[in-house]
Amino acid sequence: MSLTLTAADWLSLLLHFASLSLLAVGGAITVAPDMHRYLVEEAHWLSIPQFNASIAIAQAAPGPNVLFVALMGWNVGLNAGGLPMAALGMGLTMLGIMLPSTTLTYLAARWGHRNRELRAVRAFKQGMAPIVIALLIATGWLLATGGNYALSRWPIWLVAVITAIIVWRTRLHLLWLLGAGALLGALGWI
Image 1 (cartoon, rainbow, N blue to C red):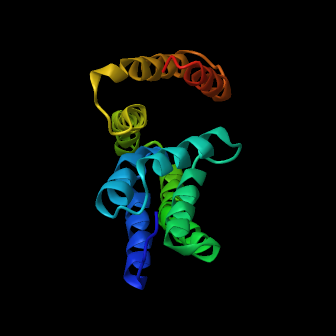
Image 2: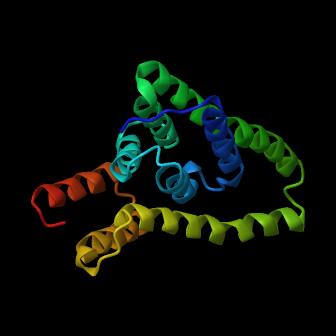
Image 3: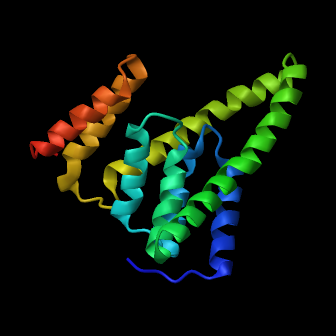
């Protein structure tokens, strides 16, 4: 994939990730469906395999989950013209996803800690839980379907549901589940 990105496109990339940063309640992975919509469907800066690989590689690697955003920016930059553009894309997406939420989190955490006994603060925390869960389910659905909703892909959906239940009900490390999924894929079962 070869792209030509203007300064306005790079600014748009930065601002889009900055806006997603403020919506990423529960982590950056919760806004992955909108990243997919923006990068793959609207701008056509990433292919579906590049998008999915960015998330899968970052999730399998040690370190913070937000590194998938860096990989998305890196891949957009690579598509736009090589390593300097990849570094620019990585820097812009990470700056966009980190700076607003980090600043807001710092300020809100200080305020919330000072006012933790207020009913409104406790209600807000309890009210946000279903939203975070719904966003995580949307992300899982997007990754499991890969944009293909054919019923013939039911084994992948089944593996996704079983994996979600295992993660929810056990303390089994995610790498074991990723390894099991890779093995099932290598054997041709999914």
